[in-house]
Length: 331
Image (cartoon, rainbow, N blue to C red):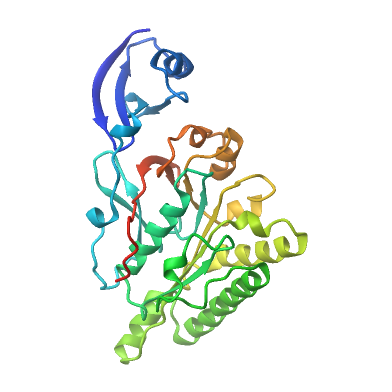
C-alpha cells in the first residue's frame, strides 16, 4: 500500500497521523488495516482511521502516563456578562482550542450525550454546567438538574441558579418536564402579545422598559435510562421531550439528555430526532455508538475514555477532549 506521510498532531489523549493515499489506493483499504495496526502496535482497541479533506487521519493512543488533562481553569474564565449567543464548553480540539456550542443554533439547541462507565460522562456534564455558570448570572440563567444516582451534581445542591431542587425520582422528573412545557407555552403567549419571534427580541423590549429579562433555562438530565423501565413514565417523558425539542429553542429552554446506556429501547427515534446535538464519549458497544449518532458510525466504541469524545454538529464529526474541573468552585 502506497501512502505519503503529511504530518502529525499531538492531542491530549492521542496522536493524529495524517496520510495521503497515492493514486489508486482506496481509503477503505487503509481503514481495513486498523485491526492489523492494533495487533502490531499492541493497542487495546483498533485505532480510529477517518477520511478527511485531502488525507486520511490515523489516531494512535498516547500511553496512559503521557495523557494530558484539559483543565477547566485553563480554558474558561469568570466572565458573567451573559454571553450572547449563549455558549457551552464542549472540549479541546487538536489545535488546543476550546470548542463551544451555541444553544441558539438549531443544530445544537438540545443535546443527546452517551457514555459508558469510565468514559468521563459525569465529569463532562459537570464541566459543561460550570461553563454556563461562569458566563451567566442567576438572573440570566436558570438550571434544572435531574440526578437519579445522586452523585453527579452534589456540589450544585444549593446554588442560586437552580430552577428547583435537584430532581432525584421519576415522579418529580415528570413534573419538572411538564413544568418546562408549561413555561415554554407561557413564553410563547408573551412573545405573541409583544409581537416577538424569540427570547432575545422579547428580552430586548423588557430591557428597554427597564424590566428584568426572562432567564434562559437549561435542563441537564443525567442517566435518562433509569426512568425508562416503566412504560407510563417513559411515555410521559418522551411526550414532554418531543414538545420541548420541537419548540423550546426560541423560548430559551434547552435540554441536555445523558445516559450510560444509549440502547434502542432507551434512546428511541422520538428522543433522538428531537435532540439534534450529539456527543458520544466511549460507548459499551458499536451498536450504542450508532444509536447516538443515528447512522452507521460505530467509532465511539473505540474511544479512549476519560473525556475522549466525538462531537457531532450537523453532518460534521469532531474528536475532542472534554474539560476536567478538579474542584467545583461556583462563581
